[in-house]
Length: 256
Image 1 (cartoon, rainbow, N blue to C red):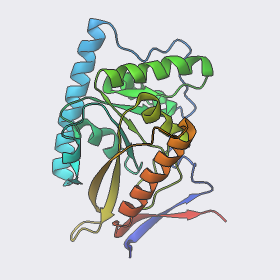
Image 2 (image 1 turned 90 degrees about the vertical axis):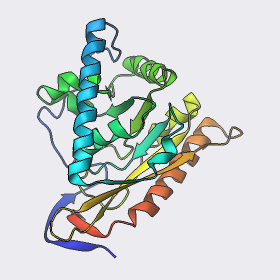
Image 3 (image 1 turned 120 degrees about the horizontal axis):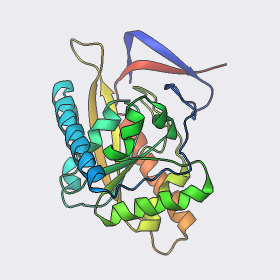
Image 4 (image 1 turned 60 degrees about the horizontal axis):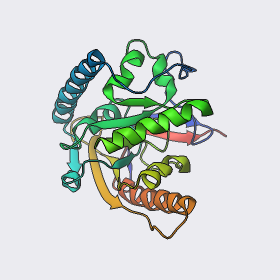
């Protein structure tokens, strides 16, 4: 049973696809000339320092906020894989993937709205962010970049709920389109579920993160069937883990 914060805030929504957090220049989109790849030596050097800085910040964040990660040893032998997570931490979901794997760098599929954030928007791709294009003619380059990074033993982080809902204690519906990547690239999938528990002396909850997997699909099924199977398996696993949340810091209520 979930207990509530005595001073719980309520966030109202109409649909599970609502974007609760609005950023500056929310309608930002991927420019026609946008290049997801980093080819110049200056760009690669800049990427190295940005990733190093993010990893350092992530280690400090985990230590000082006392996040418990259960099951990270399942990634010990994995270099390239795809990780799915519930999207409930505006800061944590950016930082945590940086320290999940010692064998590979992470990349994350990001909303194009992030490009509109001052300063950060310009740095997204150097930290592993891959903003989703709006037009079909850009999608081929976007997919090719993902294929290239997986071949170079990077792993891909995907938040299939799409928008961040801070401290939400359930699992929202997934976009099935997010599950064609492991099928298309023949790589294993894992999931990361952030759960929340009451602290003794603080209002903000303790975070416990569970890593589960690997999840694989049958080669006998069609690609669409594989995507559907993978989506259902991962969502069911995350729904089960989400039941380990025992504390509601923010309450979500549907309008009307």
